[in-house]
Amino acid sequence: MKKYKFESIFANIKIRPVVSEEKDKYLSLASINKLRKFLPDINTEDNVDLLPIAFDACVVNRVNKNGDVMDGATAAKVTKNFINKPINIEHNRNQVIGCIVSANFSKFGSNDSLAELDVKDMKAPFNITLGGVIWKVVNKDLAEQIEESNDPTSENYMSISASWELGFNDYNLVVLDGGEKNIENAQVISDATEIEKYSGKLRSNGGTGKLDNNKSIYRQVLGKVVPLGIGLTLNPAADVQGVAVQTEVPVELKINENQSSEEQKIEELPLEDNASENNISQESTLDVKKERIYMKITKIEDITDALLKEVTASSITEFVAEEIKKANDQFLVEKSEKENELKAANEKAAVLASEQEVVKKQLEELTQKLASLEAEKVAKAQEEAFNMRMASFDEEYELNDDERKVLAADIKDMNDESFSAYKNKMAIMMKDKNKEAKKAKMEKEQKMKASEEVKASEEVAQISTTQEVVEQAVDNGSKASVEIPNSAPVAEPTIREKYAKAFDMSGFEIVK
Image (tube, rainbow, N blue to C red; front, side, top):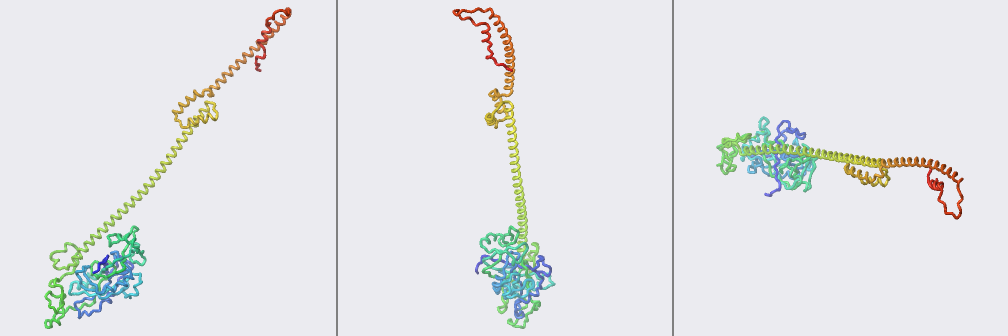
């Protein structure tokens, strides 16, 4: 048999005649009676070993709980290939109990018939509805269980459903919002690179079936799709409506001992191991002396040595599968919770990191502002100190612009200690420019000048008096003067001449 890259079991959900647990607007409470029109036309009086059945195998254009879906175009192409494929128990291919003999399409929710031309381009959900036969000689108890599931008064009413099996090599991804199931408005991802990127999110690949934006992602089978058969199960997963049989089950016939073996009708199915070659044959491993009970095991304590002798292997298989599924579901729930907690923690950490970045930025801005203010304060203090120092020099010394420039260049970067030493040095070097010293000197000079002027005035007054005396004395002396002969030696200067020369007025400055 050809090996396919992918094989998938599309489990179907059992529908009870009550309101759907999902409360999905697309579900309806269509009666199982509407499925009976798809039963294969088989003469069960002549074929008492056959139980005709009809069932919805899947809902096309609508994702199931396994995360898979088939579109209308693919369904129209492959549905006829279900014919002649096996029907097994719980997808155990070693427990084949019948085969499929017809394939049809019907409306989702009402099971009204649809033609292939109707569904080829159909975007809304619809059913693939199949007809088949159960071989009673293989498993009489299961056949009775299916018949009982058609009785509305039984607690097992519609307890058995069908799930399909497919083989395929290719698929697209479809993305849906929230709890949406119909793919008519889905985003389809067909690019191989994108499919590889997101395929790990699929439930069939161990993912959660969710994208990071909380949208759901599913697998849409396409290309060469081959139906591999149908499994009857108590634990379905898609939106279908059980397995239908004829409303009137043929009455069990007894063997007439007077008839020949060729004319005998079957009383019990399956036959005993030592049945003659003229009767219907069966596998030697089937124990027909003990009636096998097809029941549902609910807890591990139910499995006893006595029970193992009575129940079918599928009951135990079903229980183990249920327990595995429960454990898996619990694991997925816990995993989802942990992932949500981790996501919440990461989001919180991201928020805290973002807030920390904001605080860090604000702190940096405040630090910069503080440093700027501090620098401004220092600069202002330096400017004030510089101005005060320059003012002190201006107050203490008489300076020109060139001298101020030199002083400013010297003291602009000095601290207090350096400036104090510098000022002491300048006091020595610029003592001649000290305003107080110059003022004191000027006052002293002015006092000296005033004193000299007073003294000079007194001297002038004295000279005037002396001149008068001299002039008078000269006048008196001239009267007694004698003529000196030419030949006589030059006479000494007279007292008047001496004083006149000594006190010549051209040598004095008279202050008025």
